[in-house]
Length: 325
Image 1 (tube, rainbow, N blue to C red):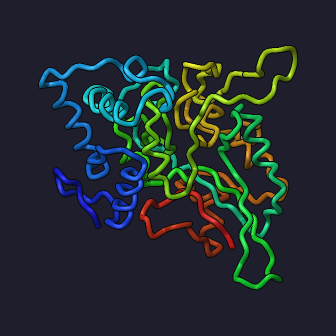
Image 2: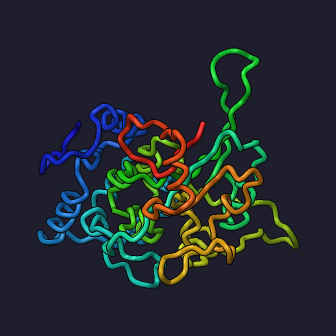
């Protein structure tokens, strides 16, 4: 188990951290020390930067929204400048952001149990997710994979849906240099603050499940007239219109368990249709969504009654998406 370079607290397996560091170095990033810091030390480092008088403009003003606009050397130089301010933890975010404060007590542990025996590979979940979240080309919050069991050609394919796994120990949170991605303590959902995100894609590299996507600003062909079809996304209840030069273009995006469908108390209502689009639309009822802290929920009953597996459990992320084989 690897430990924080400052406080020596456990932060993950050494093998995984080395893989993340090597991947970032191969991508041209020279400053990878954040990989070796726990969240507490990352915040302290940011606060120390402020105490010494370090100043920087907000990330949105200091950096362009796409990594293509600057060289890698310039990007890393500017990243070091903004980290002292933007690296502070995302605690007490204003209501205007649509993201609840991560300091609230834990009420839920939302997650999924996906039954690969029921999944028929129809991809209805992918269509429903795009329709619900208005995601652009190349951004898919859930994908359906097709794997073979064994090496024999007569083996049947195994279809399975793959959303964000909303891990209990998410590696994406640990590597974010500006704390734009964090895990909500009240319900365990991992979220991204688009106003903080600087598009460095550290989190995309760190995610062992490939569940994060970069918004390059692409659009689907125009539906009517000459203009591009850009409906606002309900994500985080922000209803942002995707415009070039404005978030979430130039940000990393991911599944939110349709967080915007929660009520003011952080609850979903399946009967009223306020339920993650993929689970609500699954034709084979393969995607089961619920609260693992509720012992009477469907997902809790499934893990008691059946043998479930976690994907890539060796990374120690403790995903909240489990599979029935």
